[in-house]
Length: 215
Image 1 (tube, helix red, strand yellow):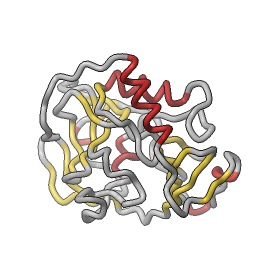
Image 2 (cartoon, helix red, strand yellow; image 1 turned 120 degrees about the vertical axis):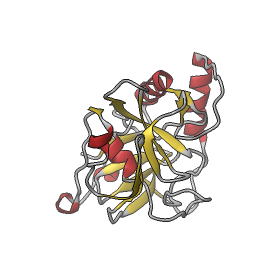
Image 3 (tube, one colour; image 1 turned 90 degrees about the vertical axis):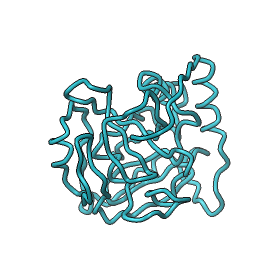
Image 4 (cartoon, helix red, strand yellow; image 1 turned 120 degrees about the horizontal axis):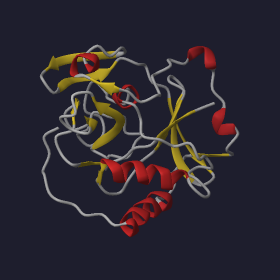
């Protein structure tokens, strides 16, 4: 993804600080405060199940993804958007803000990392988020697969110039995925909400928007 490139050196303190900021973001007005258990209630019959296990993907495999409309393909990936009819519900669970998509059975962190992180740091950030008290009371947060991350792409710009629903924070303009690139040219895949571009990440760092599967 075409973005500014710069060297970033993060310390463990910076990572912890990023998580703390994410935890302390104010709860938005109008949110329904729910218990952990009530946040898990979904209608299973309507769920579109997306791949949740990580894989090494080639460009051709990426471009064969389901539930996506692709307007342009290139040697790095594709420009496109999800065709899923989402049913987002923003909630405050144990004081933390999450977005539940009733269409996919996924619970998303409403924002994510405060800073851009290297891929290894991104994985560590999610691990830290799930440790101790967890986030929203859960301890199974993870990086999304590219299938899950692409599901967030909207067909038009809806959130401060981003191809993502305004229910989400607009700070995380591009995000890491847990899927690696098969050819090893770069470490992993990324999704750019500025342009709707899904590609092998061309930079060393991206934001993180964690996800978990609702049981």
